[in-house]
Length: 225
Image (cartoon, rainbow, N blue to C red; front, side):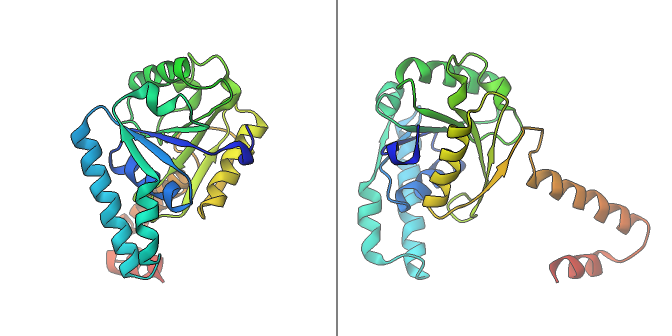
């Protein structure tokens, strides 16, 4: 599927990451259906999105008149079939539980269109594991967002062994279109790119501190500077 063919987006699960991701897409002009298993979770998520949009307007990041159209583009449901059957781009933001994600992907593929792109927001699992039961594996891609996703611009777009070049580039272009800063990761590996760099920094900082090279305050000052 190409970028110009994407008109409707589904976000699966409405927790901390899910509702922030949904907000990013509605701010980018796309209608979004947000799915969760409980109405109470969806109600809370919608309230958070509205609160976030009003904060954005307060700090002049968006105009006040944009809030209502954004909220109009967001709908919610506890019916998974209804959420995904007409979607062009589906992004799951479920907890980091392999069996949960696998079963979710398997069920989604029984409802959605054969060419719909399926993206996972996993940060610690691999798409190769998550998508084992998906038949059309070329449409699978990882989009690793960072918390809070409606504020942090960077999103890692990770290509698994199965991911087609078209899927990879469409996901990248979609994120670019909604004013995110996508980063291409050409092969999947634990931690992807940014988390691995951060952990390497943490290890080096702890080593320098333990060796007495500098105080914690001076190390912090150096990194911040």
